[in-house]
Image 1 (cartoon, one colour):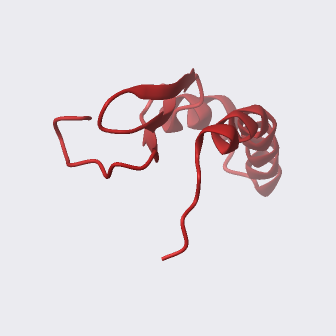
Image 2 (tube, rainbow, N blue to C red):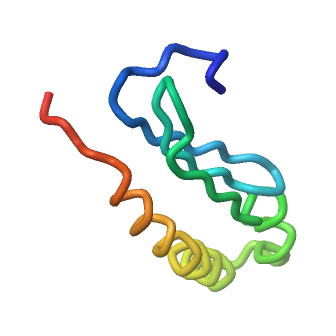
Length: 85
């Protein structure tokens, strides 16, 4: 990712959503401060939870995402400092 675009000097949050996993990163131009790979990519989640395309399946999917992402959000918030622009 570092070579794909210019990063600002302050810490940045990057979320890379793939088919099999989601990578959550806090980075700056000099180093990776936090990296977590979660096995909750869109194809994997669709195959697991959207077999019948029902509303209940979608609700189940959202609750699992929230459960898995909450600890990651806590860790990310420790690494990021938000500036007012």
